[in-house]
Picture 1 (cartoon, helix red, strand yellow):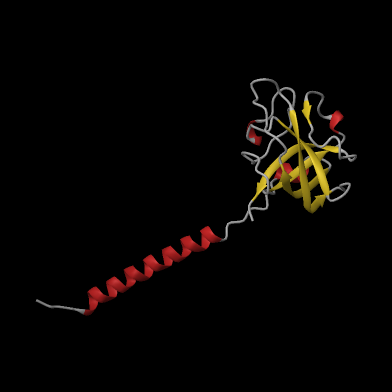
Picture 2: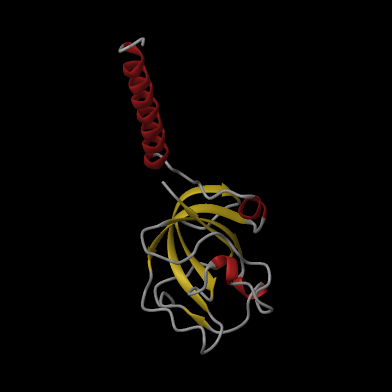
Length: 164
């Protein structure tokens, strides 16, 4: 009977090495996940494309079972990808904001969408926008910035979440 005490040590070391490499790979992929929100929809739709931080949501979104509406949100531009915006903040009309952007389109607002699931102040979104709003939407609007803003209200064509 031959005993090779070295062989089990090598096998154990190899197993520990493989487990260590797998753990390292998992940690590396978890800690550095970024997504700039770019996709063919956001990069080609609308006349303006920006990455912007949602500054605040004034008030509560009404439930969608009452009526379809747009809610005006305030954004701070971080980067302009296409087009030209007026100023460094934007007022953006989001259609039925309680719905994920992928489910927001309907017969009243056909060509909208995105990857964003819900709106949260402080997050960054990549937006494809159009202006003037009246060319794209005529209906109920909740604008809690009406007294302080003189600039245009942009229509959100596509809204993707940016992960930094």
